[in-house]
Image (cartoon, rainbow, N blue to C red; front, side, top):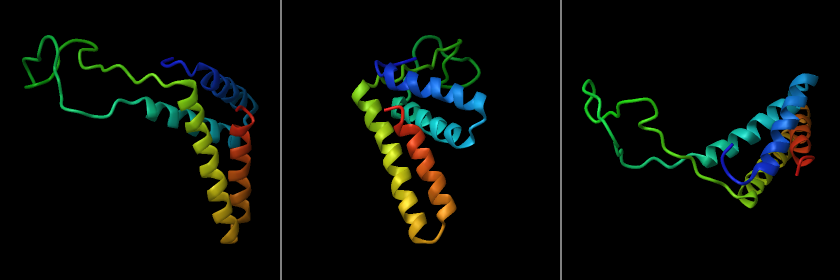
Length: 122
């Protein structure tokens, strides 16, 4: 796992495994989403293509060989990971309020359950 933010990430991954075993669809959805948000934040922003090493004789500008075009992911600190997860919680709480106002109580309740599932691990 990349990054130093193993504490929060490890808790999320452990909780996801437990939720999968328990077949807790709400928690599984919330935890997968939070882990995906962390993964997206670790992605390196696209930039100009830089081909290192051998180039493919078949495709111009393409790298040849396994892993030749791989780029290291960003390392996120514990603080950055915690901020991402707090953002996921806030998103769900805000959406739940909006759904509640528009009369979609069932959807609002599910979003609140998802927020609680994530918040319990912070």
